[in-house]
Image 1: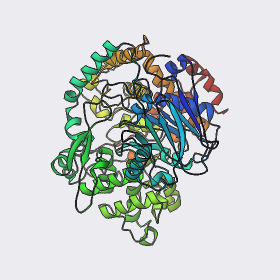
Image 2: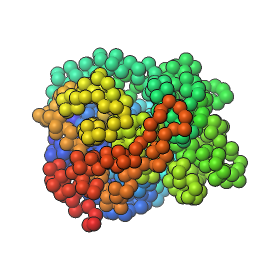
Image 3: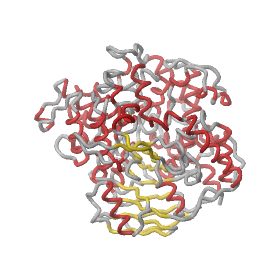
Image 4: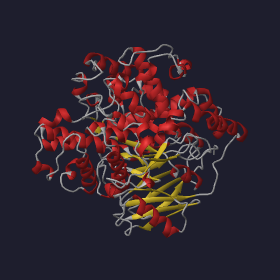
Length: 626
């Protein structure tokens, strides 16, 4: 077994109440790596086509990677995946904090959960031993109460817990799997899958260090990361992800009023500096990370915000803030706390509320529909009421708990122009009229609109560290943010494959970026941990392989190129503000076609030759017959 792995995957059958350990050959680990690679493999291999995402036949997979738990910055993440109840396709999300590292130290590389328990249970894993425990007393608890109750029951305050809140129990289609109170595997609704299985939590504790093949080489790289990334990533250390508010607003890239606009008056009230000056308490870090980009905030009035739930990231600030027309930072912090306590994806939650606000302001919703809640842009109290109603499926929140696409169908066809989603998943808080290559990335993403395995065009418009890091890949010249030429699509292809690799590894994008740690150093890190004489070429193929498996899963579930689309709103410019351009329909379509051709996907479908080149020819049998 290569270093970096335990060589053990835990399979939990909730219907039978059984747990068993499985072992796989070394080449399985090298080919699929971990994280997203494991998830896409097992979903395609083991889930039958057409299964109900919230039924017992779905799998819920927790997966670490070879670098997870290695004591270096950026190596504290894990992935959670299954068939998405939000999109009906491939679902996967990553989370930071400490849970993933603890799973590795507890002796397992992944957990496959199947079936459905008759009554609520939680899974306890300690130093290679696993057992299911009664969770009826935990059902209904919010995050903090659940975590503390499990630690108290097991008698160890250092136990790390991944759990669902009431949002997951109520199968809100964008419910998150939470850990460490402020870390979320947020997107695609994996918390709802966990709730459908009556699995409240997974508690892990371990004392086994991750095996390192070349300890001296690893130590040198870990020290370089510790010494350099807090400096090169100083903005993240000082202000967290909220730092980008100040850059996006003047560029017209801050989603405002359900993406009607790209900037908002009062953005300086909700940016990273405002947080630092007003409600900031201290910085937090994930496992072994020196950057400390997480925030902890405290508010006493007019809302009470518990600092133990952390603080809002950029996506939350935009989704529950500017996208809802809100510039009230304490209210946004309260929304973040509620989402973390109830277990909701803040992006989909805020975006769905913003959609409802636009419907309300255009007369498609009345007070009688919303239970008297004035869902108007800028109404912070209404936003907070909806977060709770969504989590508890109460009142109009029960409609919004289905996500924007399903809520739009219920409200009626007149609401469709206001539904900002792709494949059923709400757009993240990055404006595709500004970042147009990212717009193509949204369309072709296997999880629906996703900003993580994607490019951010604006950092490649000038020669600098971000572009220079791509020189070894042959990306040599700057490109305009609205460029959708073959050169830009080549950048989309190469960079998204790198990010898919990081999702397999499973590593932090902010630390393990090509512009910070660098292509060669990342390769050396994998070599030092695993002992494999790997190359960056092989690592990119890991990412490409995973992306192809996820694509095939979606094709098998009935998706076609017609689903690789974009809401019509983005083909028209903002009615006012600094950004004057929009996506051009012809250029957007040509960009997608170029991507398909570069991937070896004629008509959006991977060819047997492409699958053979990736060593996954077995997956061809899963492709639709037509």
